[in-house]
Length: 258
Image (cartoon, rainbow, N blue to C red; front, side):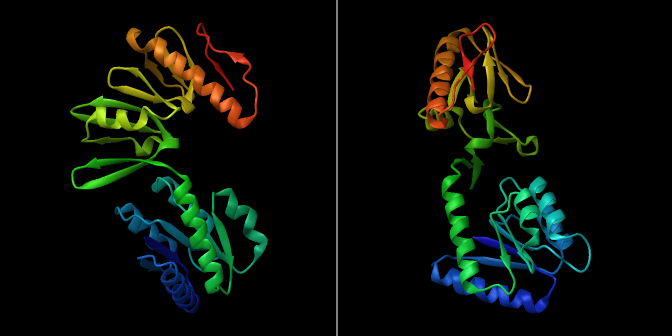
């Protein structure tokens, strides 16, 4: 686990790191701390390819941009950032949660407060299921909820994400990924070498699948009936999960969406 701490006060930084180390020891978690006295230094490290599993950002910094602005830029650079804010006032809570923060710590930061953040981070990570793909010597992780569709291409697969910045090609057999996803209600094969996340499908017609982001994917004749049935089953399952009603008919197909 790699944690980035951005705090412009050296004394506060020392206290935070001390409590982090104590909390991590208590949780028996191996970790690496990276300390930054300003946000630009942290952003520079991320742009250079460094990744962190948790960010602790001071909201009010004497020089440069504040922690909220830094967090917004991190969200554009990191696929799934987990951010907690450090602040001397609870007045910034609304702004903190507006950028998807998992929590905020009021200074002075205690060991107990840090431990609570780490436990929340662990819970969030457990809840976010990822597609893990072996690519060479590394394992790439893609949050399943953010995958739009997966296509076979050039002896590998293209994984298209909700945030297009994170679209990726990985050298992995399509059939291995298909086997992992075919048991999940929200993924369906719509053509040879192509699976779509039904969570992002708006409707089907006789030959195409329309995604909520405006993209249109071809649906093969061979897979159309099975894909459409799977889509309707998914909508029914989703309706039961959410307790809502599906009311609108989609195109020429009997598929409905909530």
